Structure formats: C-alpha cells, structure tokens
Image (tube, rainbow, N blue to C red; front, side, top):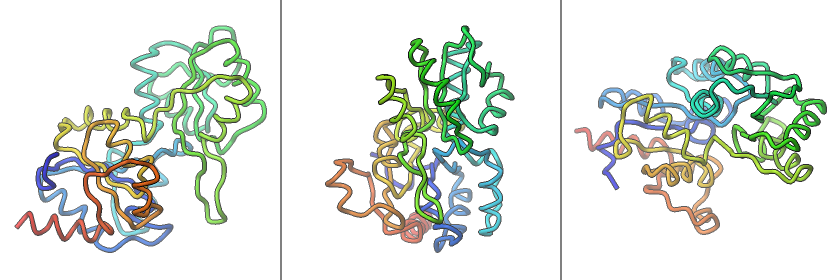
Length: 267
C-alpha cells in the first residue's frame, strides 16, 4: 500500500462522490485543483454507456467545473478498446443506443444492428432505446453461440423518480432466456482501471480509485490491484464493508475531509 501523498492518478466516481443530483459537494473544486497542482491527473469514471461524455461535461459546467472529453472514461471506452484489440475486424451486433454505436463506428469497430450470418460478437449496453426486436435478435445470436460482451453489470440506473433497469438487469433477462452469461467490462471489472493506466502512463502504485459504492468502485480497485478510497457521502455506509466483505484502503466521510488531509501533506 502506497501513501496518499504518492498518488498521482485519481480515478473518480461522480454521482454520490463529487455531487448528488445538482448539488456539488463541498471542496470538490479545490480538491481537483490540488491534484493538478501536485502534478497529478484525474479521470471521471462512469459505467453509463447510453450517452457520450458531452452530457457529463455540460453537467459539470453547470456545477461550476470546466472539464474536457479526455477527463472522462466510460464503459463504452472499455468496450471500444476490447473490441478493437481482442475482436479486431469481427462484426459486432450492438444492442445499445445510437450514441454508443456512433462512438464504436467512429473508432473503427465493425458495428451492425441487423441480423446476419457473419456476426461473431454481441455487445449489450445500457440501452435507453431498447426494443423487443433487439432482445429477440440478442437471443438468436446467443443461441448461435456468439461471444457476449456487456458494458456494465449495474442492476438499475437511478433517476429523479426512482430507478430503471440498467444493463445488468437486461442481461439477466437474456441469461434466463438463453442460459448464457456475458463478460462484463465496466466497474467492478479491472479493465477500466487497466485502460486508464495505459492511457495516462501512471503506475499501479500511483493510482487510487475513489467512490461511494463498495461493490463497484472499491471492488474495481481491488480487482485491478490499486488502492481505493471509500467515501460515505453517497450510497455506501460502513455496514457495507461487512455485507460485501470488500475492504477499502482508506475511508473518508467525504471529498472535503480527503482534501484537507491531502492539503496538509502538500505543505
């Protein structure tokens, strides 16, 4: 375990860690500025593959923080990397939003949303444009034995009125129907951290992941072999450590408490 002052790459969950709905948590701008002043870098991580990063850039701007596309990493980025490196040139049926398909096509992935005999990979995303036709096509492909990838295992996506089924719930439905199981790519799998390290050039020892969920954020750090910080400003509570049997490296009440400790180590 490295000390906090050795950390240079901060992998940040957003909702529940930096903000809640439209309320930015205390000391978040100062925390981000401190990382940069110390010669570090931060990446905002999200499992949501349904939209591009433009929506997050706009939201952060509304909260008073200017960001750029390169400050974000999504499960769609991990899917793109996986398809290009492990399944180069293979035709992939994408059950996802138009935004996800556009990103993959632009990157050079052989994307289709029409059934054909030469499809070898199925990618399931968090699809806010889901239709029964996509579900039926997915079942046909899975019964053919194609490789099944999925962007993220989250059961639900929170909304202002409650929750809606996320990618994990739709995949569970398909699994029940076909008997097959997907390979998930987003948090808590290690691929997102590995891609972040590769893109930034930082080492495992220099990286830390910060989030309010043990079973996705902290577990992602554990699976990737990097240190983790569990903040109690969002969904997670201390009892979760016993329930999930996942041990974070450090625990803080919120970003403000972490900021004050980092600031002291910098002086």
